[in-house]
Amino acid sequence: MALDGRRALALFLTLTLAGCGFSEEPAPPSAMTPPSAAASPPVEKTTAATLSPGASRPGAVPAVVDHGPRGAKRVALTFDADMTDAMTARLRRGEVTSYANLRLLKMLENRKIPATFFVTGQWAEEYPEVTRRIAGNPRFEIANHSYEHAAFTGDCYNLPRVAKKAMTEDVAKTFRVLEPFGGGQTRYFRFPGLCHDAAALRALAPLGVTVIDGDVISGDPFARGPSPVVNAVLNQVKPGSIVIMHVTEANAQYTDDALPAILSGLKRRGLEPVRLSDLLA
Image (cartoon, rainbow, N blue to C red):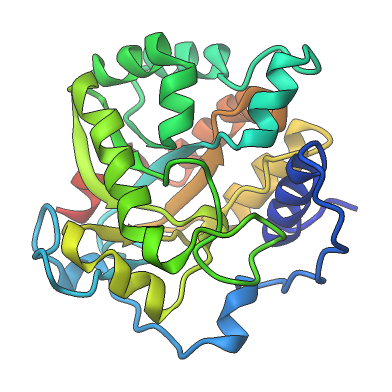
């Protein structure tokens, strides 16, 4: 039986960390919420209707967006470009070939499909040519996914944790890494593992970001074939959805195989893929 999106995300994060020597037993992931939610005050969610286009006002606690307007038949396809120290070590040892899915990227380019890439600083440093390729395409845009994909809360799929005093700099450093690539850069930010609490949001207030979660989790990391990914997306998607997928080939090896069926399914539903900034404008 295929894992649901949250359980697949938990498996992805747990297996990624195994190569870095983390031996804690993972806490059972919730089927619907990040693990930090139970221990933290609820964070008010918002939709695009309450946001001004562009970045949030610096100094304000960031808005958290799950989806765009439900009235327009548009969706945003977002692709996370994770990179941890453990993933880098696996590359150096030759255990994996690549964490950059070039076939997926070429498919998006050839079909002229808009997309938003949430890029970690370490991924951009590991794959500068691929990052330049993304930045150079006017149908693509780049968002921030932290520097080394560490957790901003204490209970987040056994990810190593960013110290509270280092949270602001982690995200600011990633913006500095991404800035020279140019192209369609945004002030959107996605927390690793989608784990955040009130303290993490306050830490990002000086940066003027908007936090993006998403309402469609594809479960593509470590899926055992393309069908579960296709089904997860098409069973959840609706107008205004923000779809979470990955461009990290070795950790999400069937995303490119799933994409044609996903695009066909969206077309049958009359849903048009657009960049996240266009969905939220």
